[in-house]
Image 1 (cartoon, one colour):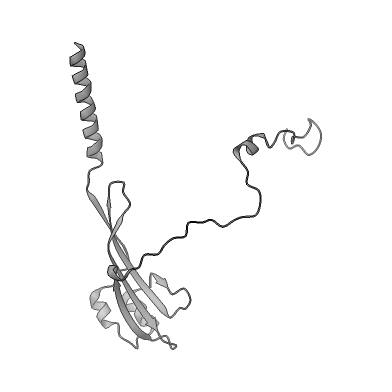
Image 2 (tube, rainbow, N blue to C red; image 1 turned 90 degrees about the horizontal axis):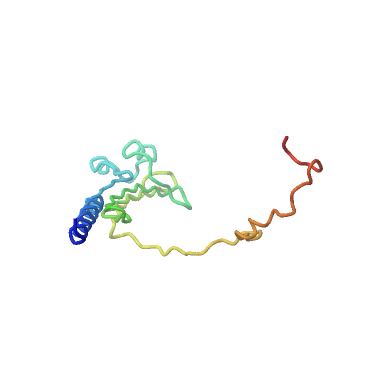
Length: 158
């Protein structure tokens, strides 16, 4: 086998391996549906004046309850699409908000979708903690001179 033949064989082998590797990352999307999607027929039965118990019987327990008051229940569903190793994209989102009055009767029912969503900027900072920050150097050399002498002190072990 000459150098040219070996070079071509190596190149063909490399192309075949790259093709197989790329085939493993095929662009097939994975669709995932998460959350509570209430049945539309049961949603029609949900009317102002229904009690909390009736709401639970009709459409089930809420995904979450309001943070500052238990007078708002949220039923959240989201459909996402993930391609290969990329982060998933939200392709559909439905939120049903059920608001109750002081007597725990349904006051209002709102349907929200992905167009009603608002982006929230995440603050990228950390909370300071008490104590000392230890470096790798401190960890490696920090125990020098801190061992008990043989046979003395409170040494644990045989």
